[in-house]
Image (cartoon, rainbow, N blue to C red; front, side, top):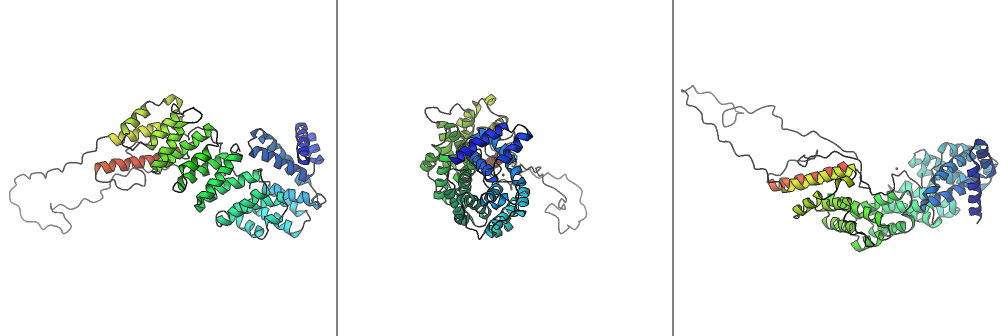
Length: 460
């Protein structure tokens, strides 16, 4: 109740903070720890899906930074205010503010060690941050501080010690359930479980995230990790389990997730998974099918574009309403149609061997010694001949709790791309097989790789 009252008071102050005088009044009226607590409450609302609180977060961050800068040594004698400074820093605060405030604060050695680690973390020096924070046990700290410390340590150790990092992320969730800290810890646990090859952990973390934080503004990061995890762990995750997780999503998000899985699986040659995901994308839910959705038709066709039903696929592609596709999807449609045409095109006949020219009768001539490096015809080998090489092209494909993120999961495709002719070889491709049929299939596979490059990221 006290925290809710602080939040209501803060909202009133923010509404008054239209001018500098009102802003200054708000900063002086609240202690640093009150501002930081209110910031956490707003961030927790955002993690739960209240995107309308985003502008308030920006204003509150500005006010909190100014208040922490203005706080004097007497303010920081209150342990609550110094802990608030550390939490602010681990929430992605300004490192200059944290360093300046720490320099004039009097605190116990452990708190100062945490401050040192936080400053190193904010300044992009992970090795020094880990060294400073390693001996400190988050579970021995007050929960508000311990949760953030566990999240930071887990993030820092994710690359070198993923198992230890997963344990720290579990501690962060235990210390701060239902908050932005838990949202971030769950989101990162999904990716770490994939790296560890732990399908059970991946499925559990994904289920918990979808249940609690599907509408977080950072959910698109979860979606990226989820799709990648399904592809990487496809041998260990049943289709039933995948269906259980996606059934908790709203129909539109579920459809987009399956479209993305279908596309990735088609590119990687996982035909069973691609067929399953394509069918689920088209199937829809609650009696609303997606069979008339041009995106569903397009990605479902891609998953079977090299199958024996190529004529059916070509007919389906031909029925797609281009006017309902984005520019990027129209480019993909063109590429898919080019692939289908390449598959059914008659094999290119091997060039017939030209008969040797008949030499005209000539009068006898004196014998000439044949050079040792000449061929059977007596002619020296051609020097400096250069085989045709295609021009190489390349397609290039973000605080502790809220790492930089792209837009939320949406049902639009990637940026526009130029369609590469189906017969164009991949820049790194080797020689094509001599057999015409094998060569056609090799070109088809290369074209799928080129589609992946054209799209960049998976369709959102």
